[in-house]
Image 1 (cartoon, rainbow over the protein chains, first blue to last red):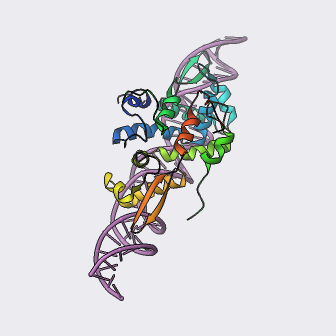
Image 2: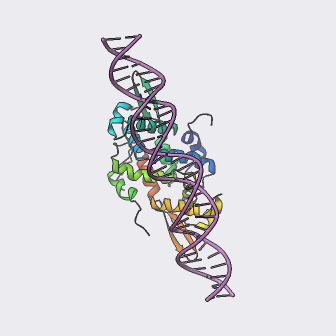
Image 3: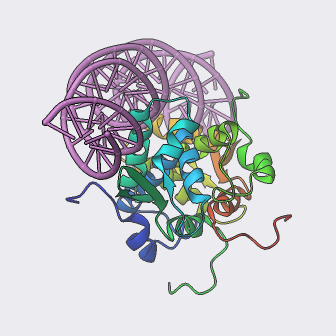
Length: 124
Length: 124
DNA sequence: GGCTTGTATTGACGTTCGTTGATGCAACCT
DNA sequence: AGGTTGCATCAACGAACGTCAATACAAGCC
């Protein structure tokens, strides 16, 4: 855990079939809770939604996100940082502007984790 | 019982097709954020998992939940209350004991909300 | 170079959250 | 009735969070 980011959904999802499958151990719960906590703020949820609405490979410039809120620019920047640390989004600077996108697969993996009906082909 | 619970997933899910479908408005984001915030704590995630593992119609007595944690009994009771206020679980007193269960459909609706691939039959 | 624009970081503030011991309440049992 | 057990609520504490103004950084333009 040298870095601040977590890999929860990428790696843990393999040995963590689902919330309803079996009781989570402390480590799985701690990692996954960080992801849900990142989504547990209305501003961050809207940010995620605005970015995710662009679809696969879609990007959004920060200059489009910031004016959509009644919040200061540093606040939006802070929320974007938290979403990035939760490994939900990533960004790239391109000239003066910075573009954000949703990391591929994260949302669907999160959804699969919550689903109670057992997904068909899971190697348990 | 106070009426401070929310109905987010039950009613809003209808006019709120998905996180990636279109940018959420402030109200949708505020309501949904409360649900994710409820899941954004390791203790509450483990509680949810322990209860959800019982499957449809399954129940868990508080007396089974509390000793699974290194936390005081009031703390567990407090977390269960938050999960109940988020309309993720419900409970019933039966004699001396209190039993908790996952409200049917909530987890799958949450999962559908996160899924990026458009679900086939949305009317269900 | 210096100026301007877009974004991130810092430091500080008030608020919310997680936790606890103490207490209250409900249901059982003599 | 009194005593006991299971769970919820209360009051209070430190820690974490969301927000902002000020500042710093990065890149383009004059």
